[in-house]
Image 1 (spheres, rainbow, N blue to C red):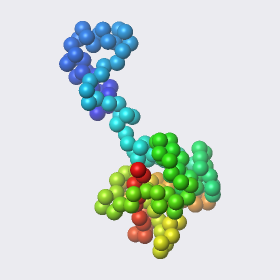
Image 2 (cartoon, rainbow, N blue to C red):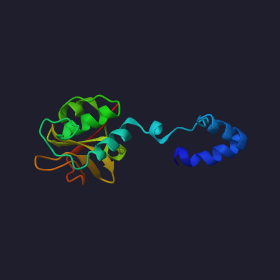
Image 3 (cartoon, rainbow, N blue to C red):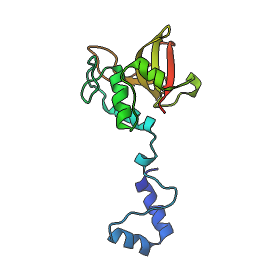
Image 4 (spheres, rainbow, N blue to C red):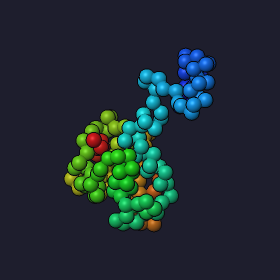
Length: 157
């Protein structure tokens, strides 16, 4: 429920006169435990939203945004906008995150694609087996199904 949807019930609790007074002076209704959707969003959720907002942005090796991205550039940019600092490369990002199991993964966690012990690609988990990522040269940022079982998961702290 958004903050706007909560206003009628808050007005009823506050009383019509109180709510009208608040509205007349340009104030906002504040109640314990009520936060806006933006305030409630975790950094991981914000990073996921940022990555999704970059849908269609072209891949460019070494690019970190705001118009072009490589895979780790997209994750770095998205988490930076959400207030979290990540290293530049996919491998360094993997090394910095809290490693979690596939069963523990949540939307906003990082998905690391690996060959043996080397990480070669990263995306942001979008839920339902999909990620937001910047795949490769000639492609664009998109949401796509995870195509392999050779993945590890990491949570940004």
